[in-house]
Amino acid sequence: MGRIFFVLLFVTVSFVGAYAETISIENDYIYIGVHDKTARFFMKTKEGDPKTKSDNNKKILLDKTPPTSITVLNIDGYITTYGSADGSYYFRPTNHDGKIITDWMIRGLVIRQILEIVQGTTTALPDTMLITYSISNISGQKKSVGVEIILDIYLGDKDGVPCSINGKLIDKETQFTGANIPQYWYSLDEGDKANVRVQGTLINPLIKMNPDKVIFTKWQRLFDYPWDIEADNSAFPKGKFDNAVAVFFDNKSIPPNGKMTYSTMYGLFGANIFTSEDMNASVVCAETISQYPFPLQLSIGNKSGRELDSMKIKINLPEGLKLSAKSKTKAETELKKVGVDKLVTLDYMIDADGKIESALSGEIVFDISGKMDTISANTKAKKVISMNPIAEAPKEPEKDITYYQGLMQGEWMTVSYFKYNSSKLTPQIKAELDQAAEVFKQFPKGIKIKIIGYTDSDGSEKMNKKLGMNRAKAVYDYLTKNKKLPKSMFVLESQGEDSPISDNNTDDGMSENRRIEFQLMIED
Image (tube, rainbow, N blue to C red; front, side):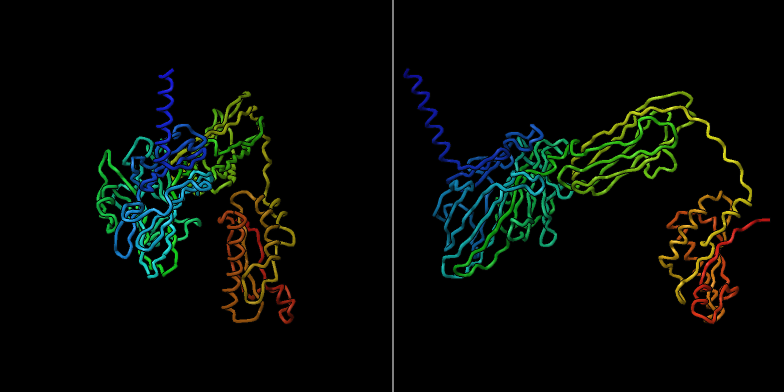
């Protein structure tokens, strides 16, 4: 009985002692602890990314006693560390309504440290710590104050894990200042196969003041030079080393009874939640194919909650099929910057690869890969189809030139009413050209159409020749560029003011003469 009592007493004393040293807040995703004697903080995951178990209960800021993530203050040139014996506590670390709040006093300043859990900027989950220092000047004199927040990164069981910005690894001591400071940086414990991924946010609506400088370096360098440090671009050593990030806010004047607020954010990186499940893909086409080529459409949705840097798609066709030359999409294609909730649709035309003499079945497979920063995910989309034999299509009877002469009838043969001294195509002219294009699409290769430009009689003969050619050229451009007719089909000519079809002495007659005409060219 005595032995049982001893064990219970030991557990109780140990629990009380541990509680006295660490004040904490937590949720399902992260845990934040503050050492009550120094107000220094550390951090670890709990569930972390809900989609993976590999980052559960991992360190993301070193948790030594006391912790090594510290905040340095420059007060009128005097350098000190928040929570040190240089000052005194007015309010020791306390969990107050889900925030850990500490008030520390030094040289006429009351400096409040607030640690709280907020929504991550790239995960949309409450998995990020907002670190805030609210500094009140009660001295009665103006004070110059600068702040440096140092984060000692430690992911899982790994130290010396370099950071990255916009997919680029920072492998040497580097600093960013002013407008060059990025919105966020991140660090992974194992590159593309990372188990733990963290992110520091530097610019965000929750951050009232943007930092003036950010340095990526070794922790020892920041400890040895707690304020006056500039990055020297020295390469980080290979293997184990202790890296850290320092977020600087330059000295700024705080008047008597004035207040200044400095903050930064640190938590889980949004690429954690990018998996193959975030790319929803589906294939639409007939299940039984009897005519070739046939259309097929692939639809892919980005459901990751973040913009993808790129997406690559490759189509794999079964034996008996090939990609048609008429397909709008190539066999392999890459898309850049696929937005959040963006639905991408790709249209394909699939043709028979040779003659299909008997019924076949096969599976069309799409390989799809997406990339977000340094994280890649892959998925597939499949469609099983049945292919019927190709029926011999009846040959179209040959058509002599008389047939095409017959097609060259209709109101669109002469397109009038260009504006005065202009070759610009009006909506009415474009509508008539659309009718002409539908007729020209029926013509076989080798038949040529002459586009002749005309003007009214106003102006010099030379000027009208040029204007007539400009009108013919405008029509040619519309038919070849907008209606996709072959350039080789057309020959351009200008008659200028010659051969009027109406009276140039009236406004209506001049409008009719400002025209183009189509003529079928028949070679002898």
